[in-house]
Structure formats: C-alpha cells, structure tokens
Length: 359
Image 1 (cartoon, rainbow, N blue to C red):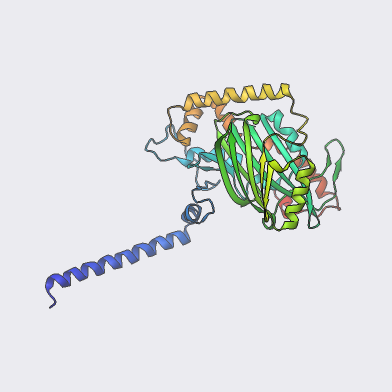
Image 2 (tube, one colour):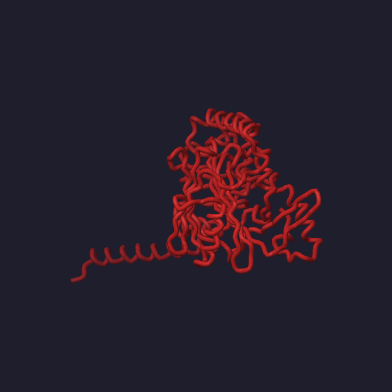
C-alpha cells in the first residue's frame, strides 16, 4: 500500500535525480564552451601525461601582488611573466618547466650556431647531434643535458631539411634545419639522472621534448640522460642507428626493440661547440652556482613555485631577471634574422609558412 511517507520519499529521490541531471549538464556545457575549462580538463584527464598542468601565455592577465597566498594553492599569475618570456609551461606536480608544442622557438629552426651561442649566454650543456637521411630528407635528432643558467635540464629535438646547405658570408656556412612538422613528430621519452638519482622525466609525441628544474645546479658530467624514441618504421630506425654507431655509440649504450630505441647519453661522442673550453665552463658554472645558491637561500621557507618567485622578485630583482632566462632564450637565436632574410631572398629555398611570422 502506498503511504504519504513512501510518496514523499519517492519525490525526494526524483528531485535529487533532476538536480543531478541539471548540474552535470551545466558542467558539460561549461567544459565545451569555455576554452579555459576545456584546456584544464584535457590537460588533466585526456593528455598522455596524466599529471601535466599546462599554463600557457594569454590564459590570464598579469596581476601585481606583493604577497602570494599561503593556502597551499599556487598563484599562477606569479608565473605569467616567466611563461610569456621563456615560452615554456610549468608542471606543479613534477616542479619542472617544459616546452609547449607551439612554443615560439618552433619558428626558429636549428643550426650549429645556436649551440655555439649557448656557453657565452650562460648555458653549459653537453650536446649530441645525430644526423641521418630518411625519405628524401636530411634529419637531425639532437640530445642536450646540462646547466641552463639557473636550471638543470635536458632536451630532445627533431629537425629536418630538404634544402641545400647555406653559405652566408660572415654569418653561417652549413645546414639550416626547420623544426619538425606535426606529421614528423615522434613519440619520445626521457629520464634525467643526477649522480644516479632520477631528477626529472617526461614523455610525449613531440618535436622538442624538454624539462628544466629551477634552482637545481649540476655539472653536465653529473648528468645521464636516458632517451627512448619510437620511429615511424624500421627503415627510419636503421638509418638513425647507423649514424649513432658512426659517431661512436657501442652496443652497451643503446638497445633496439622493433621501431623503438633506448639510448644512454652520458659522455658526448661528438665534438662539442668551440665556445666551450675548460676555462669558460668553470667561469660560467661558478656564476650559475652562485645564482642557484642565492635562489635557494631566498626561497628556503616557501613551499610552491609562485611563492618562491614572488619572494625573489621582491628581495632580489637582479636574480629575478636571471629566472626569466629559463632554458633556451631568444638571445641564442640572434642569427636567425639574418638567415631568414637570406632564405627569403633566395629562390632556391621553398620556405615553410612559419617563416612568414615574426616572434
């Protein structure tokens, strides 16, 4: 027999059900129509890096603040200037900065002059370029590890060209590559170890996979980079392995499985930039260590990156300027403008659309 109590109970359940439907519909609409919420959901739940939080330029207007909130949450507005300047994003769970897919560096291509410019600009980095030919193009996959100013970090970059070499008097004579297109990206993974202990790791299908840890000081010789790459097919893998062996890698330094290869990058096998000498390395690294020590002293009582950066900005503006130079900065690419001008005025080169954009 139906009673008043049972009817009331049924209406309560029905009301709760209707409310739940309306609530989830509202959330779904917000996700679909709000770019910020959509990006948050895809970054947290749909990315192949499940824990990644991507903070991109233009998401927020910068706010002036004399204090960070000490409620355990990160004030991402404090990172805005660094992100806009350096072209990187930040992962709060791993506490690392990393390059985004459409970073401004993607327009710059690559040539050996960029590596030569690193040491004079405060970056003492081991580099390992591996050149090979595949499907009618010249390819370059380069590995880097070392001290990038106030950060310890690493990179894997993919570059291609179908152009002849350049010969620009008083500027550059050699191969200029463009950054890999979306169709040329490869699935890559790395683990950077310092004195045998894991420091940072990432994995993604990318053209430039990077990771930088702010305030961490390391000598390049302390770092070992374990790299994993999945090639498009075995022909491509074989071309890469042939070049790897030609520069001096032995069976103990890499392994092959199907289209995959694992490489241990410890001591470089290739000639390092002329700008790196024992004397310059010592001078630059001493300066970098001083900045890292100062950063860690100022930020020792803070728990998250935004609080640390705000503290540095208030207590040491000069040190804050150094933080803005995370990873590879715009100064490294000064030669690009001259190369771009040469390419635009030479009919032998069919320029990609990216060369029509200014950084």
